[in-house]
Image 1: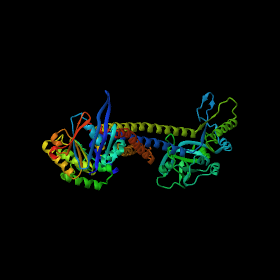
Image 2: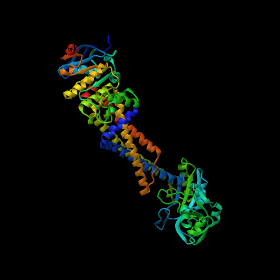
Image 3: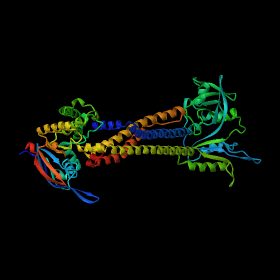
Image 4: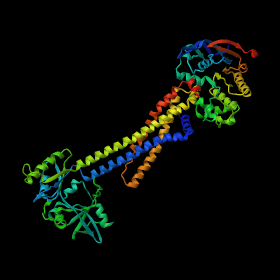
Length: 406
Length: 232
């Protein structure tokens, strides 16, 4: 039964090729739009998730605040109001997993004839734990290196590439501000952060060494930033309160005096970014779905015209023994075939366009099987839903009236 | 005694129109036995088309019984009526009513699709019947490629494909010239000689003369039922 009907549906579609093609176009555009929008939306979500994963979780950064000297306000992180001792004290707080004092700046690195400007981060080994950053080759430096201010360096992937090319940097000596540093390890790649900055374009050295040899800090032991990682997301508000009261106490701030530091919740920023892309993704999908709906209405419209045009044919079929359900399935099959063919074509075009966008703009896209399945399911549903009414109309025709129709 | 193909008792059909109820057919009684050849005559509006629609299971009566090969059609649902049209009846129309996009072979085989016959048998039987009406060489052509008389012969082949007991022909020669009409009537004669019961609607006396029996309708009543003089 289904085979001759497929053949007939094919014939009917072929009988008016332009019309079938135009009807299909609605579905093609709808499905292609859904596929492209989902690819872009999911790509954006994926990119943000990747960034969040590389950043480390449950992080606060504490920045040294503004201070006022003779009426001149320094601005945020303008001066070193935080100290390594602050970081050590915070690490003792309940709910705090790691704290890492950080001092950073951009400096020129030299290896042999090569030179490269990269972000130099002076910190303690806890920094790698807080950021869930692993060492790909060689090893990390330890707390003893920080205490004795040894000249060792951990290279980010980008820095390693630019200075050493294909050479293995571990054990080699590079120069930062004239001081020689021995490369002890190369870090695993992290990619871009939320601002789009390359996190691998960096070199990490012990804090004490950085302050003495690289930055020449006048107040050794004071830092501009401390990274604090809480045990869990739930512990974060608690940790924030404790850190604040601890710092106020340590900095001898009186009641009513403003904080001389700032706290930023990095995870919250990331989460809100993720929520934004999720919303955008849903919005894109919803807009694309509307075109799918319009495509479905186009199918219904054409099927209604087709039923009217073929009234006499329906009458003949009924006279020679077609039951109502035979007529119903014939027209339903036709609309489902149109929507399926349109869907398939739309899927291919959508994929091509999504890949094209990726190739031309470099935008991250994610093509998932589930998105394709959803598009197909929707197309089938649209075909059946919008084909149902015209098909039922055809099946319910009075055979006598239908035969008499001119 | 030959078996009965049609028995109609007190059959009536009325429609509700804007002007009130209208009885298109009243108190019709008729018996047609297997192998009979019946012509239905009457002016337009006499109720003969309504009667044909009832005989063809395209419509159900308002009152009365219609027993077709032992089944009382008056109380069947649409699917059962479709099955009767498919298996027991064969239709031949004035306008041929072939489907224009299908080859003649597929047109002839179409009733078998609804009977659930598989493709090989459909094609084989369709070809046999096209051969019987002398058009096997056009099996793969579209209906528009052949003449009206040839189209009507294809339509007859389609009517025959499910080996019906009754052929209903509604003005089968109405669109044909007299010579072609004669050919079609000769074909009906041959089929009748093979034992197929034929009921034919016409308003032309010389066409009706091919039948064994002639019944006349006027104003919804069956007014006469007589054997054809020449053949009696």
